[in-house]
Length: 357
Image 1: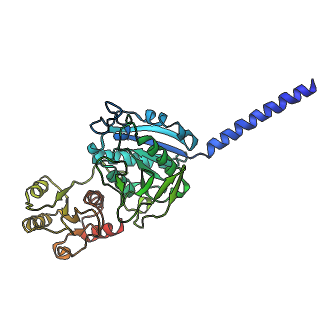
Image 2 (image 1 turned 135 degrees about the horizontal axis):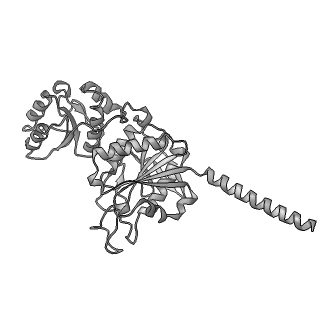
């Protein structure tokens, strides 16, 4: 009888220890919040072979999480549906809402990192915006898919898994906002979408990716030297809108019709996506000069996609009071200029920001 009591006692003790060990192991997992905004990763097609012509933003965040049960082994995951849109419809208002929500979550002790599911068309822009306004060193990782969830070889599930791996990695702390796609980790500042449909679309062509995800672990080899997140001067806490900044694209036989219309519509800043090293066409230069005299900030960028935009190279920026975009693409230059204009109208100060961020 005594032996039987001891057996029951040890069985109960062993069961309790297993429960405590299991709970302890669960507590050791990082707490990751997945914010869903829509996009192809949440898209569905008519058939399993539909990889174009599908409908984006139809699958909810809980379905995305349930489709990857392996997530429970690497993190304590919670989901929140912030938007449900195709990313070409992303607006400044969406960015402000998302940025404020990210900052609120990262301020909580029970959130170790954030993953944002996003359409790929403007993912690089949202990532860079957050890179400038997030006020935490905790990892923020954007992820999407080039194929809808119903496709035979949908890339969304493995991309989501990898993004959670990165967001939960201690090595990712302090590295700014990142994009995790196709087993690769990219800096928000430098990454761009390079192909309309293939899974390897996201590249950091010249400056190089940050690292890889392999075997459920993030491996980092490079970090951006430009300031980001907690080290920026931008604060969106009390912002309800961003200044209007538009892009004018350079091409042969260019005219000022688009430029004049945007300035007349109230643009506070214009990004001139010029040919080559941001060259100014003879017919367009007077319009840009006139716009600057009216108070519009002019930033010279390049449509080329790689290289430094040389200040005082193809135009005398000092004399014209223009700003050079450095290595930022026109779409990312627009984001930095919008945020810069919430702080200053000084072109000297804005130029400093372009060399800082």
